[in-house]
Length: 224
Image (tube, rainbow, N blue to C red):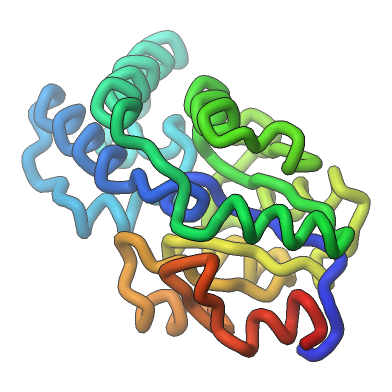
């Protein structure tokens, strides 16, 4: 892993922004509204993180859900998330300077996230990412959510770059498995998932602050 990559692909929730606690709370409240009381933060992180809403709701409610009904449930859940999170959102420590350093190196950047468009736009606008990110791939662009590799493969294809020379940044086990299945090397971003769990899923290193990166990561990214 001594040569610099040709692209970096970032998950959004829990990776660009430390917001997974808000998503977990929104899912817990949503589950309770539907009479499901066995969903907690760990269950969310292990089973739901990275999946599409249309995959989560049938699993959560243990039944097939008509499209119109599912869309209404998903809208309510995401509106609740934005209500909980908007006033408290901030980028991960060191993120903006790190993205600018990657761009200065000439490394194309993409976001690959199951978050709906409204949530993506909120983060992109709040943190000034529009001119920093070359491609954004969302749940609507792929058939299967994480841990299937679809979304990372789509991000690489959109950039026109072989997944094997991309570095992915992920905060959840499903996301790590997805990026690894796409053939990317993966950095674990420690927000809600412990570092040891991310490493066990296939990350080659982890970080909690983009401004304090492991030497192995800088060697991979910048050829140092």
